[in-house]
Amino acid sequence: MSVITILDMYPSLLNVNGDGGNVLALTRRLQWAGITSRVIRATVGSDWFTTEPDIVHIGGGTVAAQQAVRGDLVAAAPLLKRWAAEEVSILGVAGGFHLLLDEIYFPGATSAVAGLGLLGGSSAPAETRISEYLIGRAGKVLVYGYQNSGQVVDLESPTTSWAQVLVGVGNRTASGTEGAVSGSVLGTNLNGPLLPRNPVVADVILTRAASRQGIEYTTTERHAHADAVAQHAAAVVHERVGASAQLNATERSPLRK
View (tube, rainbow, N blue to C red):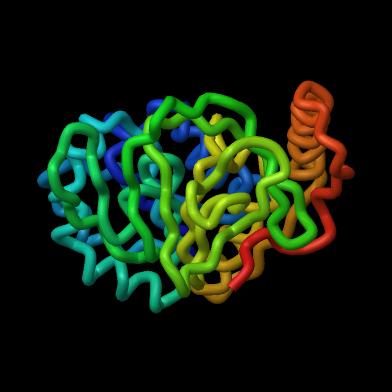
């Protein structure tokens, strides 16, 4: 029997905005589709790198947490780059997004330290903390979340941004953009957490993971019920921030290459 393996990176440290909900959303949606999954929870210094995952999840964490895991993670950068080349989905949320970049300027530091280099750009301290709803358009799909960060992302060409910002801040450069995507690697500022709010994003990740195992991922009525709840939650945010864009969560995949 084929099993989808999810590698959750340092969940005891990188879960500051409830990002563990992303892993829960993935496992539940696989269960509803009749597909078996297993979750490997990495810790610093463990042999997590011996795992052959289909999905890697890197949640958000404080600056101290990012510093605590960075060395362990960056030491395995060549392996993660190989996984990405093999179509393993790698999702970095908030602090996890920053760790995917080329380099990070931590507060108070006089120089940058290396990130994973899976996405081109850098992370630096924000002038003021960002704490607000963020709505973006990825292709024709609206994506929702909450940006809660003391760091900002500067993308570097030819890195492709993931979404256009409709409400909120997103990346610092290029202004008006949110997140970054390269093949099967996605980094985003959206948390709160991302995947329960945006099930269409989860389904793109799961479809790719299932394809790696030679199986088909098909949604059911259980998925539709959860999707309706997420759409209602999105409508509440949409109304609260007064966004003018029309809701549409079904037109096109939000993970563009």
